[in-house]
Image (tube, rainbow, N blue to C red; front, side, top):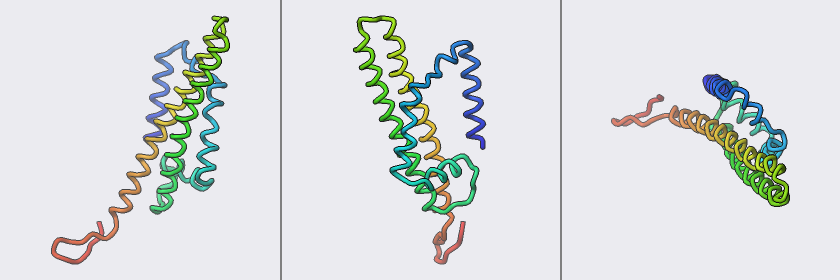
Amino acid sequence: MFYIIGVFIFTSLLIMKMGSFAPVFIHVPSALIIIPAFLFALAATSGRSFHLSWMLAFGMRSSSDASNLRQACEYVAVLGNCALWLGGVGVLIGGVLIAIHIQEPTQIGPALAIGVLSLLYALILKVLCITAEARLRHRMGSIVRQGPVEQPGGGFYSE
């Protein structure tokens, strides 16, 4: 829950600081280059992993076993990596568009926007995925640590 609140506050402060420049960073063609990352990650894992990853990472579901957490971690890791690769593809597409329109200086700006903003969107998604994966791994570690632990003098107890 604190994660969602933190992202909301950070985004709000960033938009307030940018003022009238905030709409410049909203570019649908660049976002369309990154959206297939969700489909690639879904194809590489499963629909159950997709659902579990966001429910567990953002605290909407508190109880889960280690195998569910492992599946959710895998999905989030694949999603972040796919987003980075697609951000690179967006940069290449922007570079090709710049090369095509090199004689028309007015067309270089929109082509550069596609390349840079697709990489920006990919990096933002990767940061969210890294954070979600860290949260899931922390939860997985706490489940593993809760098992029986051997006492120094012999015998077992649960933490």
